[in-house]
Image (cartoon, rainbow, N blue to C red; front, side, top):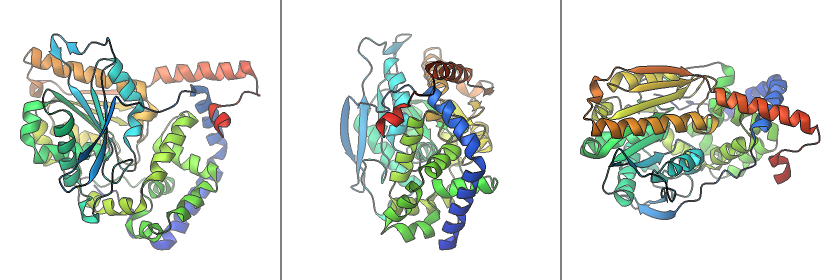
Length: 406
């Protein structure tokens, strides 16, 4: 898999932003329509997960990793069919942080699950490592340390988005015994096992990848000492920033608060960390590691319009893990846990319940028929229609929560 934009140089920056600007001009009417729809979905809630406990886990090379633990809600059911529910460990993707799991953390703790969410090295509140430490193999070892510190015993459910899925596969490669003995569920969200070239896409999709990948190692290096230059360039035009983050992270309207959270994570990632990771993606291939998840209940979940890890990447995972269930969401992009949170929450809950019952009933997961579903988020459409109707009845003077915050 190749997530790098290659050798672009400074000219690539100008071309990339020029194309992005042209895409913004061409799509501004549609974008404003999507914003109105996104406003209709706005609830006014703060997208902040409050952890029960925050700890620091030290990686094997000494890098401090920020970890948050959410205990099950008081009074929630922590057992299923007399068996304890697994601890759920959430690993986020490239340029994101543990904040991206805000909807899943709330839903899972309410359902009686203990949840661990952590920031991968160089992201969020975790510290940076040496440049040579930014490898997928090292991330797998970091995940092992997190599991060791937060859930040293009992069943585990490992869920990873994008690079977080790669991290989980790397854990399987380096710690196969842990997977065999304790992991009962594996959630692969918008991720790839490697060994597949990234879909080329059109020129607008290329502009999106330029933003999301920070223009690759060579261009990113130009801004490492002056990161405010690139951020200032994007933030000077809020419409450009919003349009790019929205268009290339999502494929359907989302609340502006979700766009703001996504932009905060993407644009808050250190450029040096960004450029240090790109060689790891160029050389990444964990197809062989998937064999260690044989017998583990597996959900492969992705968006139909994901420009970074298109459905064929997920299909490669399904082929490698017998009995894996594949759910493809229409009108969904890459950052799917923020775009279609309710659907993902439902699918994760179903995954964990299948995993517990498979153990209780001694089900041979490998012999299960593969299940493939293509799903439309009808609940989101209905909420948007109701929201638009409320906005029309309230009149044009109504302001969005973001307007109040600005």
